[in-house]
Amino acid sequence: MKQKAYQQYLDSYLKICPQLKKDELNFIRDNLSITQLEKRQFYLKSGQIQKEMSFVHQGLLKSYYIDKQGKKVTISFIDENFYAADYPSFIQQKPSKYYIETIEPTIMVNLSYAAMQKAYKNYKNFENYGRLIAEQILLKKQDRIESFLFENAEERYIRFIKKNQDILPRISVSDLSSYLGIERQSLTRIRKKLIEKDV
Image (cartoon, rainbow, N blue to C red; front, side, top):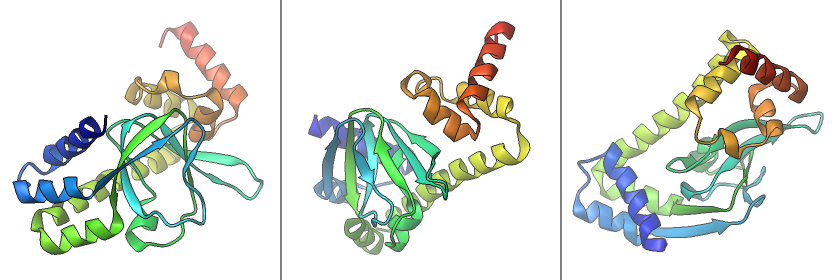
């Protein structure tokens, strides 16, 4: 399992940065570790500093914060081949405002902050990789922000199901309604309406 997870992680690097050299890939491999979490375990809690950038080999997580009324507000779902990250916490090494919790048993491949900084210093190609990953994370956040600015609840749901067919059966109605920013009952009505329209 460990070697398969490592190879999947290295393949993800090569997909984004095919110019990575053998010594650079060897450096990555030598500094990797594995985290295994059961269902409903925390990968990160609010107030903690994210010390590792973790790639999801297998499983599903959600990221959320708790608002002033004590309600959980889901901001993202993280499945295979994506990074479980509060990027500002990791890059600045400052306490996170978010929780990242498993929805399913999860296996992640980790590269520590210290190892990544060493890679940036010693290997030129890593800077390009880091920039591209940061862009992916920021674009995903921007996409969600714009969905709230320019779409109604039904439009947000339709776009979500079109983009996330693979994880839709794996997440609860409560988590999905929180992510979409609507009440559970409203989501149930939207789903019923779309079924009747055969969307």
